[in-house]
Length: 449
Image 1 (tube, one colour):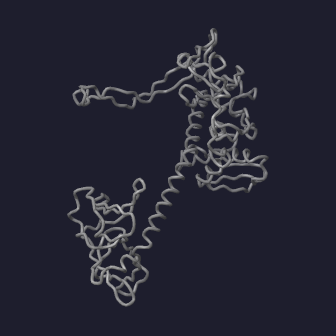
Image 2: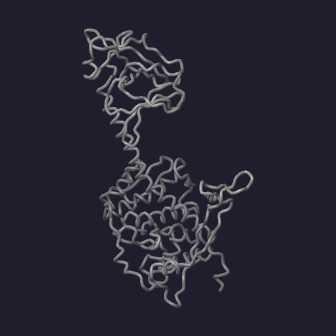
Image 3: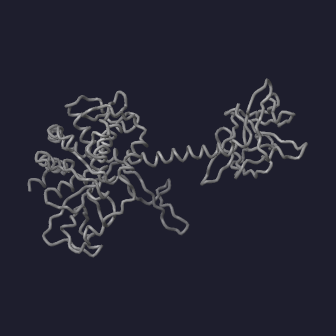
């Protein structure tokens, strides 16, 4: 009865303090590399992993009660899949926060806004004050009628070591293998320092350590901006280690590289003192750990996006290079390289090119002499609007040219290969094209000066 009178965060912190003393706290338990998403508590009905303090609390309960099954669900959820909680079983309370809610949309007079069918429209609104809710969940070992856990073994769609290496590369963090027996992140140089790879017993140990330090790396002011500037042994240092350790545990399960807490056993005493003085710290640490984990895993799609942009840029360059480009300057003359399709134009046919200096757009007629094609600098007709420019884009795999004014698009034309401007069909994106130069007979490639 005494526990029920204590605030939820105090109950959770006290339980963890007991387990820290015994060496059985969730992040003190090592596990070997293996099947991803197999250690942390998750809900088999929703298919989602529990997060934040609920991860820590449910793992603590599993350790205390001897549960080895990571599946947890409510009484009603068990019923919804044809299972039932055994009579007399005691549930575990978890909490979750609600930051938004769905409400009926209203107009300025407070009347409901109706859709085309006359039904009230709904909208998601941010709550002024987040609301906390509690739910009671049961472990799969308290429930009858569930399929064995082995049948739910999840398919590994990646090589854990390769994925960990990809994350380190995606971070573009400065990593130095210049230590003999320690690993750390140095804020002043924004760099990670590790022993040589061959000093680790396994590849999983190496990547587990590297990702732990990458967790600290996320605290830099340019990233998640946590307070890292505190000496070893201080309460603030212990708090940061707690955040990184929980994040390492979550990442180890997500990636399937395992988790080894032995290197951070020295912080146990500091963690106990921190939780005794501030029980809410475990909630803050769990929340920060989720942000660290999300940031690190988010590096993967960010790198893929950058690589795609680079590839797209290379594609554009490779497409434009065979078109028109400047190959030399002679006084008032730009000597040009032009594609074969231009070389074979009917004699006397007039052609020209759009010219851009990055800020505005111009047009110049292309001339030919015995040495090849050229334009004259004094014949470039610059548009009066100084903010006209030509740019190249990719939209769902389709390449197109765009003429912009004041940063706003005016005309676009889709291109599948280098071709003269007079062969392109221009679409007006905004009705502001009157100020543009008249469409000349020109080429896809703008010149750079």
